[in-house]
Length: 544
Image (cartoon, rainbow, N blue to C red; front, side, top):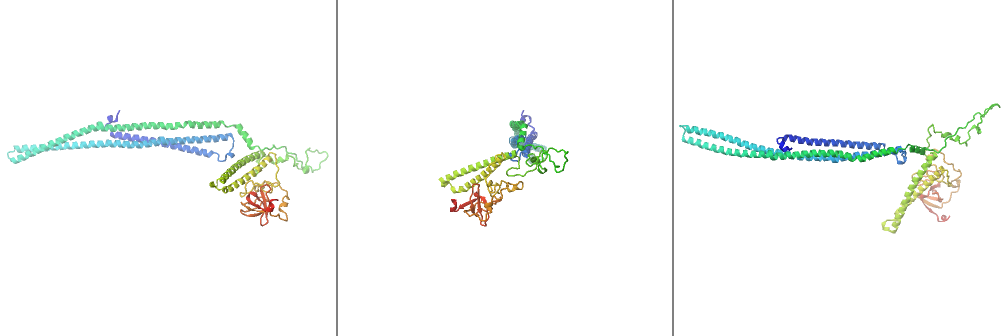
């Protein structure tokens, strides 16, 4: 069926129909847009939900329970699922909505062109009809005028009183009107023939072609709608395999939940290593009361003064009954002695492993700098070897700090494991502030920093241990001098405060523990880190 043949007289209705088709296409495009906006909002809300419930702590602080790990796996899969919803929205926007809007603009332009062609040919046909109608009316008027002239001529010709000149004049007027009538007749015939020809062409050639173009356009619009319907579904179908994998991942995460493994992790995490408390001894407070010979006594072991034996291990468990009460909050100490033995051992081992990794990085950096220095020495044009020396010195200093920290933590670990190592006569402390390198030890042999002293008593040194060093009446002679490379605040007992570039007297060299004994010009003496000063010894003291 053809619009041009069957709908030759329905120009206005076809105009309305094609406009409705474009409006319907744009309505479907609006539907797709709202659908993709829903997908975008859904994906955004899913990602926000995942972000809300994702762990915000470091991985080391996260629980290792299989139920938690499975939940985090589900969150990851849900995040991937949200990504697929974003893919759906993006594909719909690009392949469906965008395509529909571009096609709608093309349809509007094409429809406008075809309708303009139809209106132009209709206007031309109307003009032909007007020309024909005007010639027809003119021919009609000329015929009427010719009839009047003929009647006038016949009346004068039959009138005996009319003069010959009047008769001749009427006759010539009749001939003129007849001639004009003939011309208007010919013109009318020509215009009528032309109009009939244009009208046939209009309704049999031009209009059918225009309507056929409109029909083709409308059919292409219908085909396009069908294609976009299919694309709309294909976009969703393409993500189904990945969505299925996400759901399978969630099911796998659910299967990985192991209640026995979680119970074992609880034991590993909170096992203290303490033995359960024993029975409490009977404390007899009636010993000072005189009894008769017939009084029986309870056969309870007596202790001096009616007090429990401090050597009895049972009495020492009195303050460890946390089973049905709240465990007292212990202060956080650097040596982790506030933790139960098992937990302390794990934390110390973890700290040693981390420090060892940092030490390995510093060693790798030192080796790389030394190699670069060798290259510069062999090829001076590539760089100045001296420019690398400060960085090498800083790296070596960092290595010394890390080794000191590792040694200190290993000593604590040995203490926990029952392998008490020998401590040096003067054991350095690890707590110096940001001016001192971490791990640099203080000379008084305490492992307790200032912060932890308020919670536990440090080992009490011999009060006369440093008498020979600090309480001499005669100060030790200076064996050299040194210049401070960095500031040091001397926060621990036995250390000395110094400022950067300050010059001090050296009165005792480093004995291998990383500390040098110095004296200020004011006479104040103390220890400073050897790596923090540049030492110059007197010539006569270097051999001693």
